[in-house]
Image: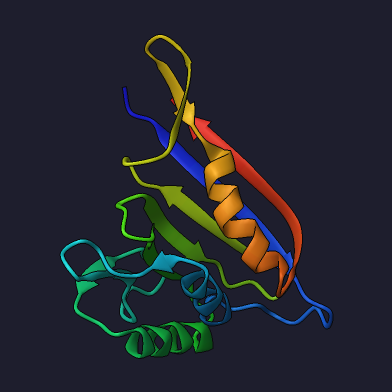
Length: 153
C-alpha cells in the first residue's frame, strides 16, 4: 500500500509582504535542515521547469540554489528543494508556492519518514517530529497562520 504524507504551512509577516522561498530556505538550513542528498546532489525545481514540477538533481552550492529561487520568484513561479534533517535521510520535497495573498509552502514527506506505531502492523507519520523542527525557527521570523498535516493511504 502506498502512503503519502504532507505538511502545509502558511506564514505572514508584519507588513503582509510576500514571503518567498528564498527567504524561508536560509532559516530552515540554519536550523538543521540540509539541501544535499547522501550522494552530494541537490534536488530542486529547475529554472526551466515553468511550474511543471520538473525536479532536477545536480551538484549546486547554496548560493546558486538561492539564485535559481530568485529567478523563478521573479517569474512568479513555484520554487522547490529537497531538504533532509541533519545527517539523516529523513526529509521531503519542499515546494514554496508563489502567491501575493497567501504565503504558503508544502512538504511532501519522503518514504524514509518518522513513524509512530499505533498497533501491531499499523504505523502513522510522526508529524510532531516534523513540526518541532519546522515551526520554532519559522515562528522566530514570521507569524504562523496555519499548518495542516495529511496522510493518505
